[in-house]
Length: 594
Image 1 (cartoon, rainbow, N blue to C red):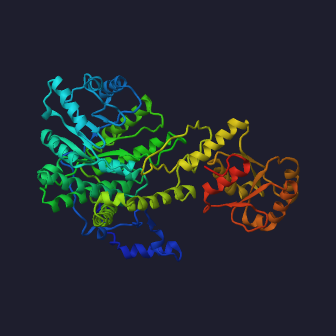
Image 2 (cartoon, rainbow, N blue to C red):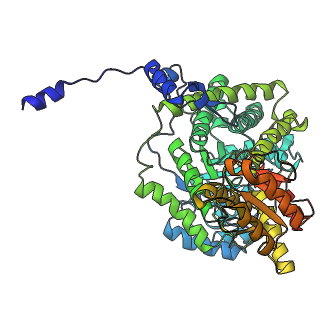
Image 3 (tube, rainbow, N blue to C red):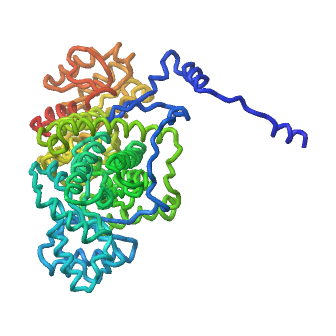
């Protein structure tokens, strides 16, 4: 008992940040703590450790209410008939779907009969509508009003979002379809359906073009201010106007940054409404979220399930009101829709993320990231406003240029493997059956995996056209344990470009190397794999011998070297994509374009 009592009385000394820095400095052997910092696309420095000091002065933001639950709002696919879509709705409402969600540019509703077909047996007094109408809400709304009259349903009982975003459409298409009549019409619609949100501000045009979180937040807030101003000019109070907004954010796989992005949006919206003189209730934000497509790939598609799950987690922890989880497959089907829909219930019923309001609150890291993101985005938002607002920023092309710079960096980070994508630029599945995908638009939709997808598609087409697989030989010099690290590195390096790899045995002497090259090697392209010591001793001779055996052979070395006769070197800092393009050209796989 005395021992137990003594143990209870033991107190550990309080550690300080300075103590931690000293310990880390000793571990880093001369490097500074700052060497552990990393930079984000938003220009924010991520630190390895956050403390209470970091969150002092952080903004308060508004949780969405008494619940962290969200609507399961899976968007209907395009390309199907209205009766087929109704079948999907009828089936999926029985197994977890909670909203009718579609876009009118993908699901064409041109007449009253179309709504009868699509919404057959759907009880709209119990089911929210999530309908994005593009540049104008009035056409769909008038048809819906007529349909509800035939169903004897009171218009006031309808809930959800039936919203437009003509400025977002301008960003995507380059065509501004916005007039005084558009604003006047939507103002009248707001008065008729107070329970339906008719302004749908989307981050999609910017996110899917490659924008960082700062640019997304600034663009959506600038768009919202433009809409707010126009509605107030048409007689709506700030509270009436604010309560008709729904914001839609695409959520990527940078878990903490995307989580902070949604939280920062709440900070910014509350600040804007407060400055307009709105009430505390009006400062609360309604947010729909959808998983990103920028980081999805047709390569090893099942890995997309992991990406969408991470994105959904970020969204619901941040506190969204509704969520659409995209299909893991480029060809959406019943199975892929079921996986996406069931992900909601893994997060709800198995992870209980709908039980805790704002579970990220108090995290030194997330609170700091939220504050930094909100501050940086507010600065960029003010920059847009000084240019005359979002329409001026888009018309002058300055916003698009800023976004393009980030998009280029994202793509380059994938090409040089600074950022890794499983199945794309690391750990490829060469048994994939590949189908090209299409992207179009003014703010072009970016998919960061596309460059490597094209490499793989070209390799696949080469095999189909020639009945031969593009192949590269690895010349392994030294013992297995010596060359294996670079052999493994080179294998993965080439395979992500769709190249098959053939390996020599472990060749430990210059004589065995010469014999194997003379008698066994049949290829045109070879990659030498060995240690730096082996290169110092034998690389010059090996390269010369390879050129003697095959004058037009293309010699690659795994590792850095400046030996004459070496055509390429591959290493950790290589631009993997550019070098694979060159190698594919040498092998006749492409004509220098991907």
